[in-house]
Length: 219
Image (tube, rainbow, N blue to C red; front, side):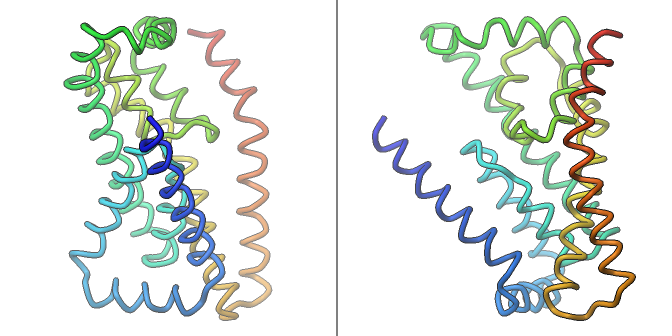
């Protein structure tokens, strides 16, 4: 147990360092840009692998969306970021369904999740959509819980895409514009656009609880 906590602490520290450098270290950004340009196939695969690792340890994956925006811009960045989210979420779903669920049948250490799983079962794909639309949840790690439920993978994936896409667009766009501002290849239009993106993320996080309450009442 102590070893597991130590490993997670190390990953959290690494996550903080990497996220800081991605946002503020221009040399680090330039190195990543050169690498992605020279490795057009392997670089997206590495991005996906990074998100799978973060999701496995229930760490925030927003850094991946920001990185995708920095390296590939808005359009391609959204595609790669969404693909990374789908792969990482699918991985945790498979682990939850075929490993944790079987383990839980003999060792009752996941009894705390019973009420959550029952709630998921009753709402099917809508539960996936609501959960992934909430920016406070570790989106790619939610597959663990959904793997314990009776929700099919198709319904889980459908709800995931619908729920996570708006936030993906906002965060990837934020990553793209933050890179332009830090590298000073910016004009007043870009500053205004970045301000709008930041405000959109803020409003999204403030309004989402109200939207989720409305959806829940409609379920």
